Length: 299
Ligand code: C5P
Image (tube, rainbow, N blue to C red; front, side):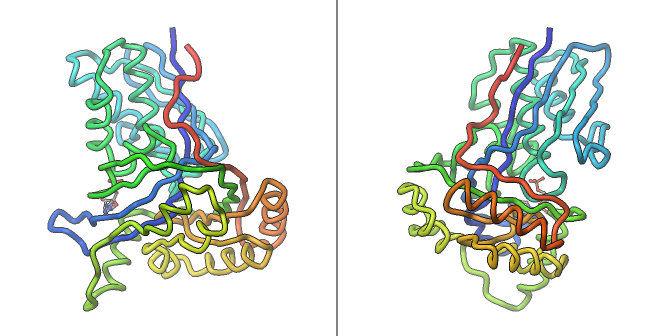
């Protein structure tokens, strides 16, 4: 008996960041769009909690109890007074430390998989609560689609999306640590007045219409200057994608993955090819969104 759950990556089409709070986190207005790049988490009963991983970036994934998939299994087991004895296997396709919520996807996937395997019958609200304890982006990995996240990003409101958006993603040669990028955001903003983060009405309207030109004009990422400051070569990747005809180019979340919005699958293929040829990234992927959240793919 095993359960497999498929979970999408995300791109932030808006990431508005406020000043650091007393708890060290930052208030956000975070507009998430789930895209069709997936990790698959398979859970099988075992004597002890064990994590394995395969995929191109598998060697960078921690296999101990710091892995969000392991933490999710432990959190659910504790709530239901049972042993977390499971083997969690992660088939990883989402870049590691890439700003696309790959770790969060594994946390949400393991939670849904263990819930199904153990037949806990936990209400969705409780699963979302556990997700929020695991990390700011984990609730969105569970729900997918598109959503506005406020607070740390964990308080979600689902958003209407009126069409399919096509993207190219350029993966970098190394990762970036999310806390380090937020610290750099704080450093760059020292002595300045940082406004309250608010969702852009133009952006929400563009999503609702499914209009890629309007979305391209409205995207923003307040973490981008911090990511570029820590990883200046990303500027070259963004420029290469723009020159190749992307409607817009931005850093995905805390980076270093860069995201390029394009009009259709044909332009996605052309921009992907040009980005690879530019030599400014490690690899490229195309994907479209919105994509569904954590979904049971097999039992
Ligand atoms: O919630 P999560 O564990 O994903 O956050 C990772 C780190 O990113 C936090 O420890 C914090 O440094 C930073 N962060 C933040 N404000 C947020 C979300 C994350 O400062 N809203």
